[in-house]
Amino acid sequence: MRQLADLWVANQDFLDLGGNVLIVILLTTFLMWLLILERYWYFRTAHQQEVSQVLDAWKERSEHSSWYAHQIRQGLISRVSIDANRNVPMIKTLVALCPLLGLLGTVTGMIEVFDVMAEAGSGNPRAMASGVSKATIPTMAGMVAAISGYIPSVALERRVRTEVEQVADQLSPEEVTT
Image (cartoon, rainbow, N blue to C red; front, side):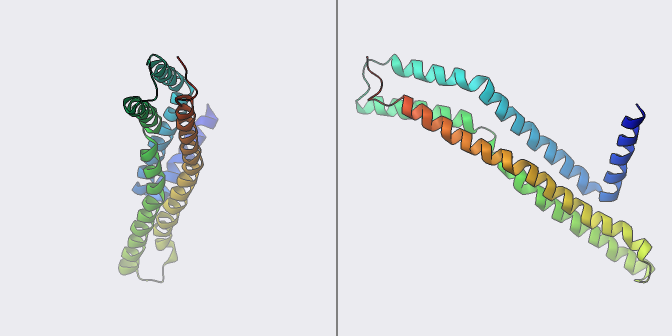
């Protein structure tokens, strides 16, 4: 229990050193990872049911070669693509937003340094240290958050592309015979 309390105090000190922008980065990172985990959960559970429903709908058709059949096939593939891609653009946006929030923290920290310099003069490095930490810590946190979400977002994009291609292959008119 003591270790948990020490961890809480260390995190609180880190948030205090980084300023308010660090809290926004933390919330953005939490949302990003929530969406990433939701997508992995979707592919683990609901995606296979969706693919089965699409394949069953295609197999129930009596013919697969007319213009209407091709339009229905495209609609079924689009349905799988839309469901598989849900939240992926938001994840990519949050990944791109994290370094920008870090930059915002840098700017606000530097403004604080300049305020201290205006009030206390430039000869007091101790007074400027708080602003410098508020300028550097959010930058680091924004970059770490972005890097932590970049790799899973690329993997999700690749998985979506692969899954949609597999469904398109399975709905091929040549492979399905009735």
